[in-house]
Length: 114
Image 1 (cartoon, rainbow, N blue to C red):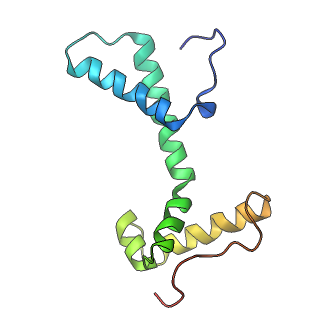
Image 2 (cartoon, rainbow, N blue to C red):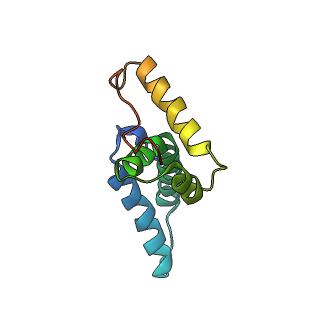
Image 3 (cartoon, rainbow, N blue to C red):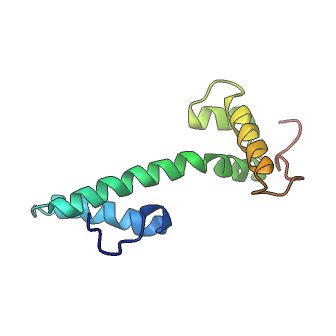
């Protein structure tokens, strides 16, 4: 990757990172030679996207809860053992609160009994 003023990957929009990955894949699918720089940029973009997806999975869980998904359904969807998704969500939410990144009163938006 070039060093000439390149913006760090973590500052790029996810859509830009995905575009790098798609560009590399399309280049190969169309039978063109994939340049070393694009291959490395796409590899770095994949790593950054994977990291973001893991770091922000709690937000997707919260969205599912807002849509009235039960914790058991979320466990099945993400392949976690029973109670795993709820523990993960609560752990991350508590950490976000402790760091002052979310409102201290933020709670699970889902149904209490499901």
